[in-house]
Length: 436
Image: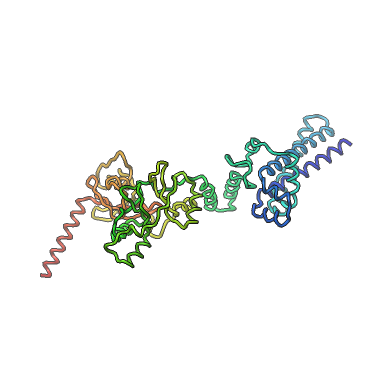
């Protein structure tokens, strides 16, 4: 009688543990929207209460699954202890049997069943999950955090069947098993990271803002637009802390077409400034800019000063990565153009630039050619900006990247430039003589 009772208890506990495992897998993989649809169509009070507090119900489900697995193991151990002489042999046999049963009947098969038929399992076990949660009572908050049911810092009543950390793990596993591509996994992870990223991390710093002074003419503004490559530029007063408005290229073109390119200032056609604190979450700002149909916002620090500028493109690139247009191209870091002239990358080290001209260049404040150009210029370089440093003439040639910064620079030795000018002058003189 005792043996039969132990067998029945063991089978019953294993069966219940299998059902709870399938239910747990189904609730974890069943989308919340679909669960709400099920609750609305079936008018089930159990599903409504589970949706109202999913974390408590999922923890109760996990608790009872583990409890029945342990109870089944104890029943099997007692059964073998009653049938087999010797406690060590009984324990060994019980361990082997429970490992096989737990793997097949509790671990793999029920989880697969729950994932493949999540809708049916959720509908069928909703009442059971609600009952188990009611029997267990409220799960203490420290137990929820210890079990990892919610992401660190998330409230106990979080509206999700799966926590963020669990979902991230699912994505990593799917990527490793090649169920999704690596770039798709990176995109999903970027969406999660967006919720923790502050505006200060993605903004264009104050020192890199290209702006135009108030009172500037249409012609000056158009020239700056063409040289910088930007389509929206702030209008400033005496300093960058005094932003008067945002000038849009399309507004300028429309005004030029209407009033002509000369004698008119840009101040009246500037758009209002949208200010945002640097501590604001990127996800919140992205949603607000979409609603307001705004593409540019000025970032302010805790003292009300201008900290930087952020665009809608900057926020989107936090998700999809850097967007490169058709004008950007991959070129070598150093390209000889002849006559002592080189096209170099703005990221080229200063020492390497010096080696091209047989010179020893060194600077304690900057390390790259782009940094050297900006330092000597005293402002943010744009296309056409030109300086001479240690006998080398540097001219900004191209803008690229998410910050629209100078990417390539033409480096020329002054002697080579002077020789070229002299040759051009001689050719002009010879041409003039032949005409005479």
